[in-house]
Amino acid sequence: MNKKVLKGISIIGILLILFIAGCESNLLNKDDKAIYEVLEESLAAPKDDDSIKLLQQFRSIVESNNEPYTLVQFIDENIKEATKEETTAMIILLEEVQKKYIQAYTDELFIEDNQMELLKLSGTELFFAEENIENIQNVKLKEIVERIMKGKYKLINMEGAFYPIIDYEGLKEYSPYLADEMKDYIDIKSLNSNQPVLLDGEITIPFREIEERLVKTEKYIQKYPQAIKFEEALRIYADYLRVYMEGSPSSPIYEYEGKIIKEEVINSYKHIVKDETLITSKIISNYIDIIVENENIIDENVLSKVPRLLSEAVSLLENIK
Image 1 (tube, rainbow, N blue to C red):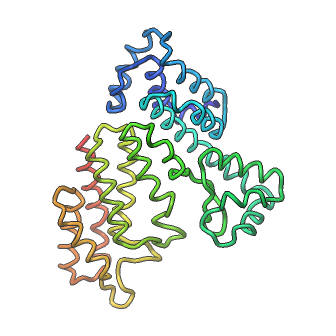
Image 2 (image 1 turned 90 degrees about the vertical axis):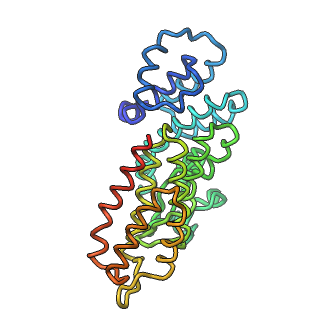
Image 3 (image 1 turned 30 degrees about the vertical axis):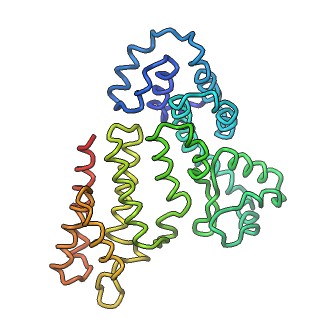
């Protein structure tokens, strides 16, 4: 694999080495510092155990500059022989490789008239249907789309063009073979890959569903404070909370006439504060006080407080780790 890709997955590469070295199975619950500490002890460990050969083969495939679809093929062929820890390590690394190939695949999809043909086949559909691949006339484009789809991506229509995103719903097929923290992480990520909360600047789901996603993400963070995906979960949480408190330019949380907060929004706020186990509950309770003090009008007096409240929420959750 080229240096640019490897640089972005160095921590995950360390994790893979640790599994290859036969480290203890609870490694997935360690923080980055612990990973480095265990690495020093593990590099000298014997590597002749049959149980480590699978990950040695997988690492070799990754380092040979193979695209995600090749990694997926290897996982599919060997998953039944792998332990949950081994499968989790492979899926973690697969995801990192998938991320690194998104731009390259995007560039290929924008060559010449590729987008025009994709749009002609799918029209205004949000996702490019897999069954439409056989109808692609451009041989090179057809081959590109096949590689993308086989690598556990989907093509999403954003602002009149198709872009590759990781198909976390597709990755769910590996859930029975994964450690719980990775299984739950994929479940959270699949929500936005199935239906982005924001699309072309507009909120696409009911406000109560944003609340549900927010709660689910916080509960993941609370349940797995030492998760390898802790920082990513925190980022997802912050993105949801920002939309939950601010709305978006095309989908504000207030009525255009009078800037009074929308009923569905305030009702959701009042609902979420009932769960006192949530840090979000405390943050939104404070936000409600600010809104009420401003006579339920959402203007700069209210929205200017969002960055501070958002920062407080993220800080409190970070301290769980």
